[in-house]
Amino acid sequence: MTVTAYTLAVLLDLFCLFLGYRFWFRPAPAAAGYGVPADAHGDAGAYLSVKGLRDGTLGLVGLALLAFVGLRAEAWFMVCVALVPLVDTVIVLRHGGQKAVAFGIHFATAVVVLVSAALLFAV
Image (cartoon, rainbow, N blue to C red; front, top):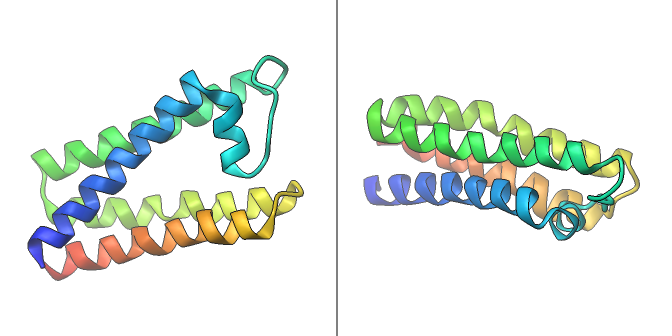
């Protein structure tokens, strides 16, 4: 179970880094994948950069906690980070995005993050 807990935590942290990279360097497709398309060259450009910074930073913090502090700190971090995709679900729904994206991507991500936290606590 330890290998599974570590692997899932690392994959989720790396996925956050990937999302951050994507919002910085490919903002239009990243926004469309998020569920609320935005014009990266218009007023939304700054917000897409902020989202990229947020996601990338969460990935770096998660990896640092796992490497330098330990499983319990990473588990609590995952519990807190689960709020991000939960709120992303609401954001997509409030702004006319597809329910399939809101629940199939964002809500499902929150569930996976909480499963990761549970695995880390169980180790």
